[in-house]
Image (cartoon, rainbow, N blue to C red; front, side):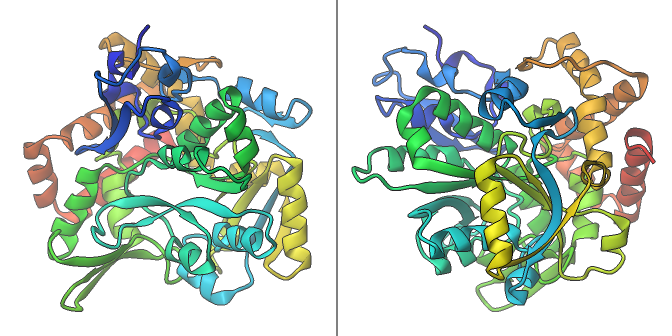
Length: 429
């Protein structure tokens, strides 16, 4: 029986940790690399049962099939998956809204679930207090722990692995899970196989994600814009108003602030420091989450909003009920919008994720690179091939020492112009 050791992890693994969570022999650990977290298999413990491959969201992209299993009667849109309703909203706690990435909806949602005793804890991600360059997953049981996890973390994490800790808890505790699309996919794969996962994880909160940034990308940021990676006491990537920016604080009290537009578009928006598996991911909006949250990139909002507003996609009845109760009890402000508005708010990245994915898949196959097995068809286009030829080398070059040096010395104005060029090619206007 094959195991995760038989996969080409560089091209298939999302780093989610589902394989570690399901392993009955404790044979798999998630270990950080220059890219993200990869599974490390202990052959002495492994019994080659194949359970790890059965829950791997990296090798099989069966998002539509799982969506049909979860919500067979819900509406479906090819761009965002199953849904019941779409909204824009934000936290009515101004401090939470200001310190969060896009309106504070995820933070408010978890706080509400804990305050109302709907859950006993939430699996969430924060930056590690002892090593701030690393993100860590915790089971938050207090509002203080939830607030520590506010804001985006443009750093790899492996949150599904944390589910192995709740598996062994004897009491019938209930949990919420917050994660990126590939993390939610891993949780759903576990729930299909394991009764404990279905019983313990009662709601999933998915975050919109274009792609992950590698550990190399984080180190590059600090070396390029701040005072390096040593003696760092804290890192935040968003927050302090919208759209926010990077803030690096050192042990001596010095802080360095970099606006989002100065680091995301020229480096990460152009897919430098991007894991290969992200290049063939079709899921922007966490299509398998009960509720999905992301920036509301709508002109009528971004022209005026300085605190942050979330685009919200409700997929399950439980999420719909909870959202309504939160509005009634004064936790959030909420306005329903059309499905077309939800798609419009993400139209650029949805074009790359959906319309041009087939071309990248063909390019990977042409060069004998591993790709997932999909349960949907993605067509190839000329524009898609041009985009693939642009972004795949960007991902490759930034993994090399010479490529990182090259990027370090290129003027920011040149890289910003290059990112605009990529957008003109790949994003519909």
